[in-house]
Every structure is written in structure tokens, then in C-alpha cells.
Length: 278
Length: 288
Image (cartoon, rainbow over all chains, first blue to last red):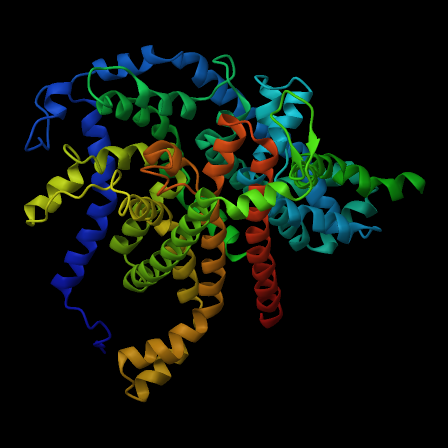
């Protein structure tokens, strides 16, 4: 039976779909197109919606405006280190909260919860002062340490560890497997999808992060890509803002994350759904 | 046996140390600093509640405060209403709907720097595509970012655009969790679409709506990148919000104590919303 549940006719639905698509596609398209336009064409009116003369000079200009390769390397190094640190802090903590009863676990879990409600945007000033006192400003450590653990990761992984049936562990214990080998040989492989989803989310978050690097660094030696791309805005070019160069840099900043999203879209959205429902 | 007892503590120690040093301690230190006058170089001078008194009497902070509330209220309202409409529209599992949902989620995972820069160019008064498109419909160019009556709303538009995919994702999964038989029963009763929405859909997703309202509130209080990269708090402080104000006072004017006091005020807001959020969360868990 065909039910008339949709009050909106098909053409209307298609039009709305198209509108939603355009609202999200056009800004991205405009970024990519601007990135390959010359300055003259960029300021043309009415604007061109396709370019016959793509120019790659903007990318060269973006690379030359700040130590691009250094910033890129810093981004990779900082993101990678944070992921590694989080594996070593989150996995054992999540396992302990999921599988052991111990005195004070409530308090420590409360501390974990509390750290969720204390965002960087609230505590950056005292964290800066702390880093400054220990001489860590402009060291990689200042960018890595504040994000070396993830409360969200602990919640999510704890849930996964809890779902592992007790029988599996009993069987392993019967075989006299040590607790460590139970964790590394059984629990971690079972939790691998969750761990890799967490890794992806952490990568996206740290790769995109502008706030910590802005606050905790002043030197080219440790600054990351978002800071470099944002600085393109201030490039002296005769016009107020050289948007074609800015968009070229922006494109480079976006591409890795977009690629990861295309490849692991389901896993990422699933993890975010979990985050939203928690 | 002793080693066994210590084991869980050893396992949580690294994570707990990080949380204590980079979340708990800074909060306490910020509270402490808010009672001092300090420019980061000279000695700290204890001035009691003077920073708070200065905050309350500061016209600028009054502006920052009302800006933050306006930004929060408008972005939460728009986010919820639009994402609910989109989630309802994309509810059915078709290839097209899946593609659209994936498309609107894309900005959520890209950097706020990128989103800010894209929209800075998009909203350019003279060469921006947005004004060109509006011009095709006969709308006069809008001064999105340098008109003090418009700029804050423009920043809200950008943040709603960025977050829509996430809000839609959560609402869509809440909509899918509504048992189909409720709708079938309503259909047997020949209920009108609007009354189905009001008496089935809305009550079933109201916990999710409330949850999203709270997360969006907290997220909007944290706004910084759009302000820093698109308007620098201007024109005439019309887009200056909590985080940017603390940043300015701390890193540009070196008024550490004053900035810390502003931080404490912001913390009270986040704290109130977070407590409300956990109370709702707690209830939801019990209902399940």
C-alpha cells in the first residue's frame, strides 16, 4: 500500500534537497575555485564560476608565506604524539574503571567527568602561566601534554570493555594468562574498532586545533598548520586580504581531514553519535 | 596480593595526573589569581574582590556579557529548529538522504580556522559570493561583518552552519529510535501530520532536544576562532564574547587578575549548564 505520508510532493522534495546540498557544497567549491584564481579574476565582477586559467601560484605563495613544511611536520608530530599518549593513558584507565572495583574509583571517575566540563577555552590562561613557569612555552611538550589524556576516550572505551562477556576472561584466567596478557591479547583486539575510532577523532581534533598552538606557542619552530594558514590573512599583498592565497592554504589544511572522512565516514559518524548520546 | 590492590591505581594514574594538572589545578589557580592584580612580570598584589567589582562596573564587560548571551540564545535556537527540520526531512533512509547527511556533516569535522576563513571570504562586502547571490534576488549588499548590528548574527550563522551536521546526526538517530508502531497507531486513527508530530515525535525526542540545547549552549560559550579570525571582536566590541575578552585582557593587556575574574564568571555559566546536563543525562539513563 502506498501511503501518503509525505505532504511535500516529489519535485518540492528534490528542490529542498538541492538547496541543502548547495548551502553546503557552494562554500567548499568557492574555496577550491578561489584557490586557483589569479588576483585579477578573483576580484572580477560579476564573478566567474569556472576558471579557464587555473593558476597554481597561490599555493607557491602560501608555501612561501610561512615555513610551511616546518609547520606541516609540527602538525603531524603533535597529532601523532597526542594519539600515542592517549593510547597509553586512556586504555589502562578505561580498563581499570570497567573491570576493577577499587576505593575512590567514584572520585577519580568524577575527576574524569569534571575534566570534560573544563574546556581549554576556560583554562588557557592558567595553563599558559603554568607552562611558562616550567619554561615549556615553544616546546612540543606544551602542545602535547594538555591533550595527553581524553575523558571522552575513557568513557567510550570503558563501555566497550564492559561489554566483553565475563566468560571470555574466565577462560583466559583458567589458562593462567596474566592480567597483562589478557589486556593485550584479548581486550585490546576486541576493542580495536573503538580504539581506532577514538584515534581518528583525536587526529581530527588535534590537526584542526588552532587554540592551543595560538596560546602556547610564539615561535615558528613548534607552530602548527592552522596557525600558519590563519596568518595568511595578514599577508601584505596590496589588497586587504589575498583570499586566493588564503584559500590555497586552507585547501591544504582541509584535504587530509576530508580524505579521512571520505574513507572512514561510517566509523567517524558512529563515534560522534556516541559522543552525542553520552 | 598487595600488587593487586595497587594495580587499578597505577592504571588510572597517568590519565588522572593529566586531568589534575591541566583541568583541576588551572581552575583553582584561576580562582586564586582573580583576587590579585598582576601583569605577569611584576609582583602579584592582593586586591580582594576588586577585579570582580571592576568587571561588574565595566561597560565593556557588560557588552561582552550580553553579546555572549545573544550569541548563545540565537545559535541554540537556530541550531535546534533548523536541525530538527532537516532531520525530519532526511529521516527516510535513502541514498540521496544519506549523501545529504554526509555532506552537511563535513564542515563539522574541518577546522574552525578553515570555516572562519571560508566565510570571511564568502561574506566579503564587495567581492563576496553571498552578496552576489543575494543580489540576483534583488537584495542590496549586506555588510555582514563590519556592521555592528549585523556582525554578531553573522558569526552565529557561521557556527550554525558548521554544527548543523552534528545536531542533525543526533536528532536523526533519536527519530529512528521511535518505535514504528506508534506511527502506525496514529495512522489508524487518521491523525493529522502536525498532531502526530506534536503528540508522538516531539515528546519522544524531547530528552534529545534538551540535551542538544545544553551541548550547544556550552559550545557557544566557547566560541573563539570565528571571533578572532572574522571580526577581532569588532566593530566597536559588537562581537566580543567571553573567550576572546579573556584572551585580549590576558595576552594583549596583561591584566591577568582581571582576565581570571572574567574566566571565573564564564566558569559559573559553563558549570551551571553542565550540572543541568548531567542531571538530564542521569534521568535519561534511568528511563532506558
